[in-house]
Image (cartoon, rainbow, N blue to C red):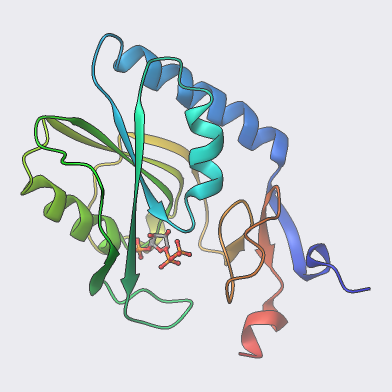
Length: 183
Ligand code: PRP
């Protein structure tokens, strides 16, 4: 039986490492937002696993909301042109908004989202991303909370997909090259 782990060349970040770092981030966020309003905004779909774990490590009261966007481009390259598929349910005017992302690559997606959300008048707008690939950055983005800086490898798992599969892997792995070269 073929299983998802067979398509992983290397485990880059283990489930345990993710757990430990997520706990640290949750503690830091809880300190920073103590006695303040907090709304976590999760960008679907990649950030869902991270949000689910991060929110349970945040001890201060907070709400969550979701937005879905689609970037025009291939599955491995984002074009930076972004379309909103699902907008927030929440009016963020006057709210402390923390965007929760799985990965920042070129920075185009978050650059677009932050610009758009800023026009809605939040009290504050910060970014928390589990992963960052600094070597790929095309647009400079200030990331307030980063889980791990990673090299430019094709990563899957813990929310991140290839062709919509592998999001359920409990760790961050590197996809075997022959898998994406076939596409
Ligand atoms: C990923 C990720 C970010 C974006 C980062 O989303 O979740 O939103 O790409 O890339 P960038 O910094 O180059 O813009 P993706 O489009 O793969 O959608 P998904 O979260 O639904 O998998």
